[in-house]
Amino acid sequence: MKVKRFSIARHIPALLGALILLPLSAAPASALDTFFVGPRAMGMAGANVASVSDTTAQYYNPAAFGFFGCRDENGEAIFCDNNDIGRKDWGIDAGAGAGYRLHNKFAEYLDELTAIDYQLLSANGIQSESDLVDLINLVNSLSGLDQPGNAITADANAGVGVRIGHFAIGARGYAQASGVVVDLDQANLGLTTATNLAADIAAVPITGYSADGVFTFFTAQQATDIQNALVASGATGVDAADAVDRLDFLAGQQGADPALAAQIATLLTEVSAGTGTLQDNSTTVLLSGFGLAEVPLSYGYALNDHWSVGGNVKVMTGRVYGNQVLVFAEGSGDILMETDENYEETLNFGIDLGLMGRYKMVNLGVVARNINAPSFDGPTVVTLLPDGTIKTTRFDDVTLDPQVAAGVAFIPLKTLTLEVDLDLTQNETTLKGYKTQNLSLGLEWDAFRFLALRGGIYRNLIESDIDWVYAAGLGLNLWAVRLDVAGTFSNQKEEFDGEEIPKEVRVAAQLSVDF
Image 1 (cartoon, rainbow, N blue to C red):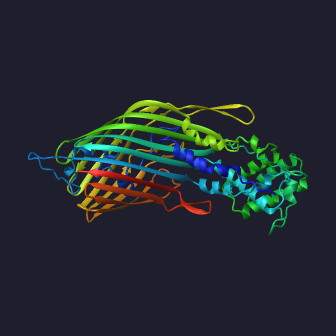
Image 2 (cartoon, one colour):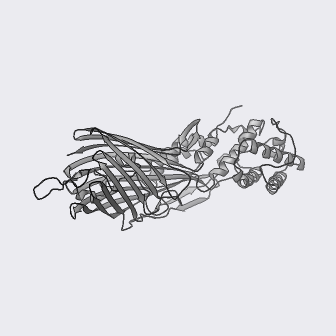
Image 3 (tube, rainbow, N blue to C red):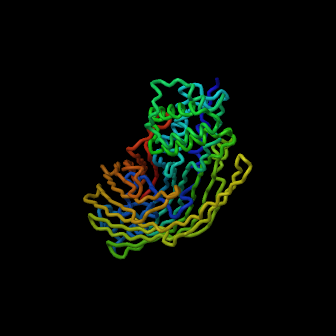
């Protein structure tokens, strides 16, 4: 018998590719997520509002430009702190970064689905214990993916900036996209059987099973609901009772999530009554994204030797992306990869303001981004369902609500910086209902002046699905040229395709010239 793999498995690379290809960030929601712009900041876990020292100040704190190239009345550079950024007159930076988050148990359920053999969908019905295991894993995974908060988010940013004295101009892009399973179709799973589903299940020998009528996974009411559905589909009462007892036993054996018992029971009742094929299945993946490209013009003004104000005026082009893909439809992989073609584009502008205080051993900073709350229109996407009906989805407009972040840096030596940053606002993401508000702690040790070592940790204080995330990075200083790289990873992992992968990962690199 030819073994078929679960249909969604072959589309996973396309799903991840579609998320990453969406050219930039946030979706049916408001505001913009916090980004890690530049490897110096990423290596310090995002803590850079008070100690930023290159053109990424356009993002972290434009007030820093007030201290670049600062001179006293004699034309000498003003060294008001141990960072000595007053010595820098001009510079060019070009860099990029990307990352992902696996929310809740998304990877676990997706991995379970990829391992399912579709013998249970063959014309001969369920024939073995492994087929029954596949059935349990199928309903467990689909029930899990259907729960709010199980999703994947991918993001990216890239930019180039040129700094001359107190002025800077740049071109920057930010990207974030999310994928989540919606409109789960429980009935049309192609479970054709030789007689009926209950009879097929009751005929399969199961290792270690003995009929006892005691339910340890389902409640008595849930078991009754499944049994009644099996009888309604043509099973005898004896076969239905035996089938439910076996399903209860295997659910416990396979480690199905007890919190999903009610959803699994509902799905099994739908499966028992279903007659449609996978081609009739309308289970949908909803992809949401927002692309933002901006050209910021920055200026910083030093009020005195220790305090500076600065700001950005940004020309912004925003694209709100949206797509809904029928998971089991032929050609769905191609539709996934075409997600970046479904968008609405809007031209707008943004304003950022920053304040920075720099003393010999302590730096202070606060930045407010997009204080004018620019808005961007959402698209309308039309999908033809298998039954011939048309589904129209209107993706919400995106408003970039103001973001405010503050930081304090302690610089006891010219080669050592320690900083703590906090997002003062809760920031929306492309995953509807999911917010971020990061607490970041980072350090930089500029060892021997040619090698900078960085490290830190950060945590989202709003959501609990991902714990502390660790950061590390390094910078090579070759006279005026500097190469920086960094990465972050969470200690929490999920198994996917036989590998343990962190629930959150980010990487970044940047090449700079500083004088």
